[in-house]
Length: 396
Image (tube, rainbow, N blue to C red; front, top):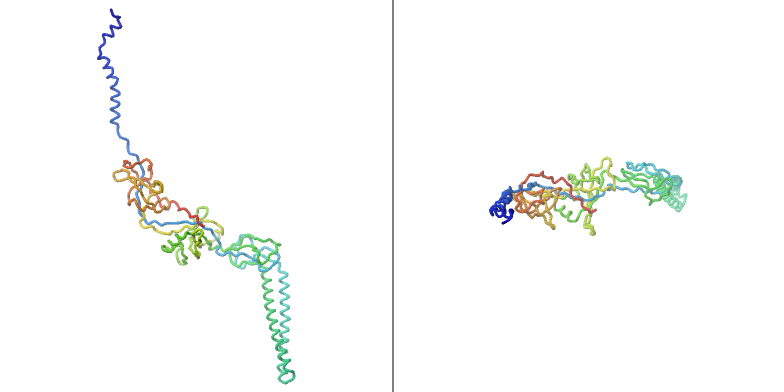
């Protein structure tokens, strides 16, 4: 006789185990079916900008050094000890203003001596003329010999020459005496004194420098190619006194000088070491605020691109020197397009080939898109070509 437990197991039907397996697998099946019918993910959102078309001025910048329009080194014309410094350093002085006083006593004595010699020679000339006048009357009566008359004529001519020499010596002595007061030959800003009171100065000594700074000059170097483009294009790098000022001056703090300038001179030759040519521009400088030695940047519009196609720089994807943009078509699908860039103007790039006007390029979300991908495009804010200045040339 079998044990009760064994008999109980023997009484179970095989179909009971199958029903349990079906009940356990049903939730898994339903879950799998639910996954297969889930909604597809939404297309990614990107920002796009239309390719614009406009006439774009092409600007360039060069590093410039400011110089005085006229720089006069003040040198004494006579030797002596400096007795006084008359001017205030760094001030504006008019032409002819006294700057230094050299001890004039030696030159005053020399002037007095020259004047005395002149007076003596004038008296001798007057006597010689009286002798000649008297001799003319006496020789007419045969009172004196002809030889005496000839001697008196020679003495008169010698006295006249002596007077002329004395006049020149007086003039030279007067000049030397006047040069003991050192004056400015131009109106401008006078620099720091390079000689002190009590110093012995000679004709080669530089005592200070005066610079005419209104207008002020800006010197900069452009490349040979830029010069050739200028003479074949809008002639911006050629002197033209009657032309509108075409140059801007950007100061070292980033501010733009409110007065525009013009080119006044171009050097006669190209520097063979650097391949550049020096250009000098003139800028109005009211109030003498700009000073020689300052650095700045000259900005000029060298060309105008007619009907240029523009895209934001951030729409470009650079790869080994070439550029690509992602274009969103009318069907909202993305295609990658190779483009050729001619120039960067501020935050915009000029496209020479690869795009058409009003096509939409991706500017935000560029790294998330793939060719053929469907996207949701939203308009981004258009960027101006003037939002950033072009990089300055390093030629000086």
